[in-house]
Length: 300
Image (cartoon, rainbow, N blue to C red; front, side, top):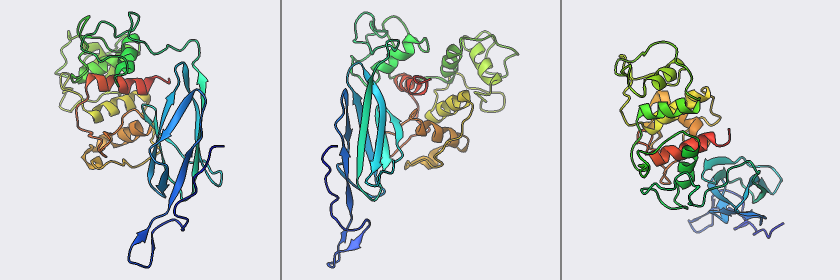
């Protein structure tokens, strides 16, 4: 077991008077044990009870995270929440904790991350960042799986917004473009439009509902909360365990999207911006959508 720093200070948890008018808050050690074939880092070496600790997991090349546990000094296991991108958070208890991780070799049938060479799906797109750019693996994933395409052989448009019709088409592609039964239910979806089968399929399966008054808004740029709702409905509208959105702008989310956003955040599909904001009505770029789709679908 790794070296464990004692809790500092050794006073009981919670604020207490120091006799001079000030306050002392107890903090407790966060010990990360050394792992083989990967590493885990914590954003805090000591934390107070109730604070959020973030762990970042980085497997070595050819390896993947197998297990990750946080236990307190009484051997109680602490709940972890996946945030996507190799990050996990937990709420610090009123005692020291130990973090342990194990890594396993990638199965032979798992596609290896590309190295940017000619076999890389995104090779040839001149408007994409190099290997190591935050969206590179996600763009490769959606291209490899036929979920998204570029505008041409050289342009992907990572910073462009995605339309509502385009997301319906992505999910329709994922399902193998099944035969569409019934007619078009939206007056602003032309029968001959490229997206008509996808939107008709999505409506028939309860994935989209439109704006009302027979309108869908196929060319409207999709918002983050609309994306969450469509993915949530596509999954069967599962219940979220966490019943609150811990973001400063949570009150900006539409009522119809709250459960979907809770589910999406809880499952690491949508993340906040690091400043405490979720931006539910903000628009999502094609690179962001690629990352969310990979978060959503990769472990299916």
